[in-house]
Length: 441
Image (tube, rainbow, N blue to C red; front, side, top):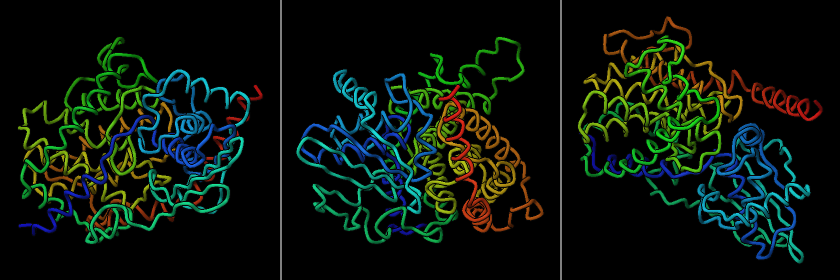
């Protein structure tokens, strides 16, 4: 039995890592930072300078802005500066008036918004400096997409983050400061077995919100139409409608909508909306298909989300590896095993198989094509779960896989953080060169 203190730890971790978000996380974070600077300015913003890390730039270049037919950090930053509502956090792009949208568009059109790459900073780093008629102000976000570390006005520091982010000391202040050893797969398994269902009832909001955008994506043509395109089967029945494929195209439809600028919010996990969609929708679809109880659905969602969080501790908050396709899908595989009555040993086998299968999937920025990678990863999760339930799984003879599941995840993290350390810069240069070529064509 898991001790009560540890149960509360995992409950607080779950709550802290699930949050509502509108639009892709990186543009929303840039808008949030601009809103923080504009609030500090206290007057109309006439110009904005946005400085971001290469990870923020890569993930913010090609993704749609909710409710607008445009993409990128310029418009996101302008909208945040016009709104000046940082209290909305990652919902900062919601409920904007037509007048605000026009003001933001005017700033961009008159080239009063700049976006510059900032080198040698944290993976998550955004600094926005705004100018009015009489003053200037600046806000800096670092480490997490909603973590302001400093706000200045006219060069004077007005506010600074002292490090207290709301979680108790037993969690080492926040989820990002935890090391992988603070969480184990074994404890996660014990938690979802032992905790009372009432404590997990808050996950109903995750179900409602994420399934709403999935249904929207299945109804309308967004992005690459990956989810809707698979379900149509206009050219025959190459892809069937079993549970695995239904989970795959339903999740892809949600990502299609989100990446194309749908105005419906999502419940993010570990700082990413696509991670939240991937970690939850396949689990919900599977549970509904096999007639699982609400209690078991909540527990399976908690399992998937916590495994996702744990895998992200090894991989990193942002990585050259696609966290949505790898970390979240690893969580989904474990949850599918649980829904079908599997054991912790079966979950371990699923994790090892997923690592052997899709560990090389890269993140080449947020864009409509994310739906393709996520559709692939959900199918892989179902395959890994099925094999695991049959007592089959990748072993230490399979590449970077180790016999111990924690060591397997550690290798996965080393692959992205050490083995592919230069890959992100190469990808960003490719994207920038492509953008420049498109402008000249």
